[in-house]
Image (tube, rainbow, N blue to C red; front, side):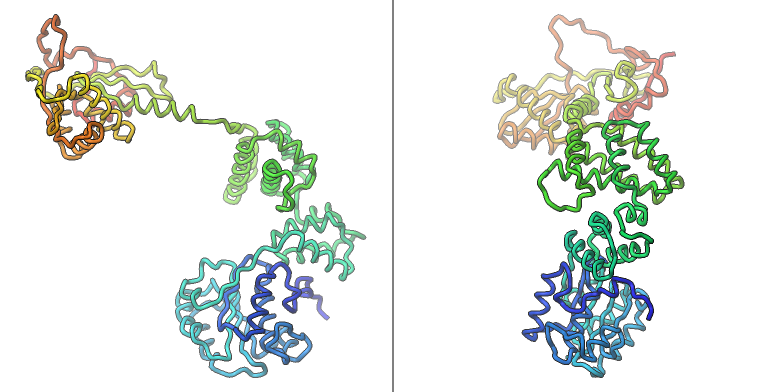
Length: 564
């Protein structure tokens, strides 16, 4: 007789032997007992958690000679044929290889025929998410109103790919990952009855590596049974699976914690020389860092699938790292493991990841840096009018001291001198006193900055609120451009909204052009023509490309005059 793999030999044959899915066992057994059997079921969950096994058990429960029964006998002809896969009333369809509309049309033609041997015809469609859109559409009507003797069982590992129209026609059961202790107990029982000598720590290692799938765990145990050894040890399992081993991982983790780059590179070289996969180094190191993170958060937490159970190692290494550092290291290791899949030279990616983990930032609080950046952004957005001189400070290269002041002269014909319009300030007798007016205007400007309206602030801050009553707010500008821009609807509405919030009155904005206030003893100066600027700066190409300068030219127009 041909050898059967362990996961086939020990496939559950009734609901009571199905491990880790008690919530599904109870529901299906009660449905069979009360006769409330649905016409379509959707079994969703990770691989190796019992979806197909449950479908076959349900098929036996419906077609057993004693059925429908929640406890099929597994001895009658119907149960034996279903177990062997030779029943004419139970059809197992692999949707990955039968995914087209033609296969579904053939299925629709066969469902109308009555069962040959049992009471129900059961269609088990595995990996149903692989069906095409056309095939799903062809299945809809049959799935919604099948003949009374038909039961559909759809199994999938990716339920999100199932159309909602299919979902709504099925009773959905979600299969959980099987717990670590449950897998360990099942493996110990199978090893004992199969005469496989295996150490308890080896069983635990297999259960950890199975990641909640019983089929994967039994397949690994089957591989271990082929080893020429009196007893399978944890080291045998590591060699078989290509794992690095706890001692190596602990040593590398200690080097990462101590930021010891030479030890990291030396250990990596030795591991690769031994034939281990470099990507596996990152994966197991990430699992160990996860164990440190969980131990640091909850030292008394049981289970959780920790990579290491050594309390001494967990306590010693976790005390040297903060939570932020652990999260940062795990993120680096995960990103590195993903990048190795596409890297032309994976070893370089692995070395970069490990060295970056050694040079981690340490998880400092960056709030002070954020505040400084905010202040610098505010300074960059402030533009002083009157010739129009812009002085900006940048947090990065080039240094603040190296940024030279630049004169941006508005575009005016060369022969026309820049004349300053003269207008008397408008003062409304009913307005708020000047001191209060200034406070209101300062509050409006501050509000613009707090709301992120930096471009608006840069323009309107060139004006001065000179009058405010219950109907009109008069703002005087010394720049024609700033006045015209502020009078446009978008800026004007923002200013009127700010004035209403600050003063409590709904007012209309009025912009006027006037000269800036000067001291009484100030000597009147003749306006200088454009061709003779007050000052010029020998700007370099890098200064002309400064982002603040480009923003000012875009906002105010004009050109840059360089010194001859």
